[in-house]
Image (cartoon, rainbow, N blue to C red; front, side):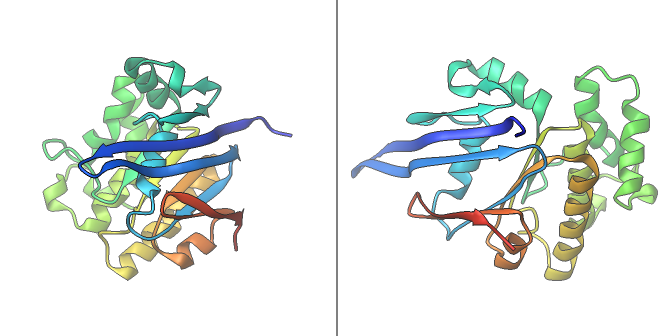
Length: 228
C-alpha cells in the first residue's frame, strides 16, 4: 500500500461571530495517495474552500490535524508551512491570480526562479507550449483571454512539479466551452505528471470524472466515495 500523500484527521473549524461560535467544518477525515483525484462538492457555504485552505496549510483547524507529504502542518509555524507548500503544492484559482506586471513566460518562470532553478526560462517555455500558448509567451495578462490566462495559471501550477495540486473552481470564470477545454488540459497534465489533484467544484459532471468524491453540507461530510 502506498503511503498517503495527504491525510486529514477529525478536522473541525470554528470561528467567532456576533451571534457566537460558528462551526464551518465538523469532524472531517480523509486520506489520499499519490495520483488520487478528489472532487470536493457542495453548495455555497458548505465549507469547500475552508477545507481546501486547511488541507493546503493556508489556515489551521480548530481541532484535528493535516499531514501533507509527511509534515503535520499544525506543528509548523507559518514560515515552515509556507516552505512545505513551496516544495510540494501547486494552486489553480478561479481568478487566475497572475501578476499583471509580468508576461506569460515570466509568470510561469516565477516559482522556478524562487527555487533557484537555472533552467527556469526553458522549462516555463516548454510548459506554455504544452498548454498551447507558444505564440503568447510575451503577452501580459491584460492581453490574454480568460481561457488563455487560466492556461498560463495551469502551466505555472505544474512548473515546480508539485506532489499535490489544489484547484479551486478553476473553470468558474470561464464560459462552458472554454471551461471544458481547460478541464481536459488539467486532467491531461495531471495524468502526465502523476500529481495528486484536489478539485473544488460546483460542476457535478466534472466531479463525476474524478476518482473520489467528497460532498459537504453545512460543514459536515455527507458523502465520501469513489466517483464516476
